[in-house]
Length: 85
Image 1 (tube, one colour):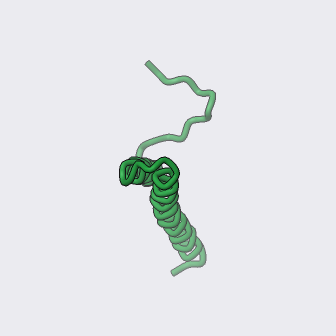
Image 2 (tube, one colour):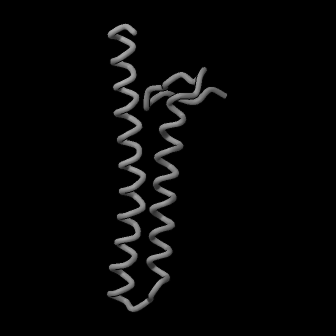
Image 3 (cartoon, one colour):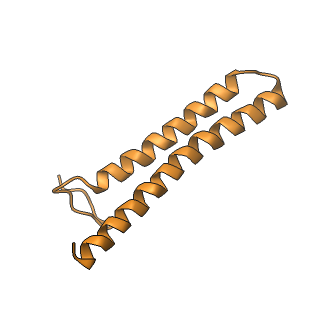
């Protein structure tokens, strides 16, 4: 395997590792915040469930964003570009 191929493998591994950490952190932070608010407002377990759901949604969005990077045929557009109609 060439040096370029190895660099690309390491880059992909780093991106997937970061995604795993982001998914875990999103769910954990949502659950912790819900648990904290439940204790503060005595609403067990509703805010825990709600904010854990928000964390799962944020994790899903992160996975979706990463998957979109690997779709073939999609060109990256600059932030100011207009959509073609």
